[in-house]
Image 1 (spheres, one colour):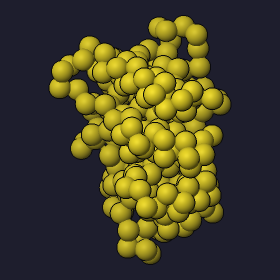
Image 2 (cartoon, one colour):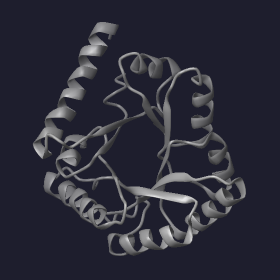
Image 3 (tube, rainbow, N blue to C red):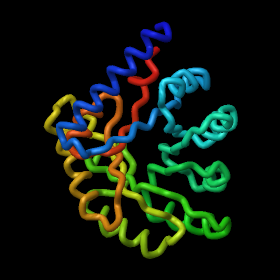
Length: 224
């Protein structure tokens, strides 16, 4: 795919995001985070050159290496993976724009301790396992709101901005939609929440229609 073909392809992805967005409201804003975990720094540069600024990685080491290699570009870096406690300091040294996947109280308290020592604030989303699938991380929907409030109270260095979830692993649109609706309904009830991160390459249009204002797009932005 040459440069012109690539731009046309990406423009079509943006158009699909726009169509889904306006079906919600003309005032609904959606941020795209390009998930670059399988992509090279050159591929990130190619996407940067046509306007994309936010990128996400799911491994701390990859986030560090790519952000260092591309430090001359004004990019914002998101960490979207599940964080191991022994990698917290490594992540904080990178100081990402947003951590998407706070998935346990144990991790929250450990993160708070490390943030307090470093005198840092980290913008964070809690992960909700709205589909209740064993293969997924996150808080169960029934306790998500109370846990969110507890983290806000107990962990002042974690600046909770909202929620993240992964849609149900299903070919049935209704089942996937239900998982997004569950997350969005929790999001609407949370004090001060402004980010509802739902939707990936295979289901982002549905996620936006269900209220997502941040989508995490990988393969659809980095076609091989």
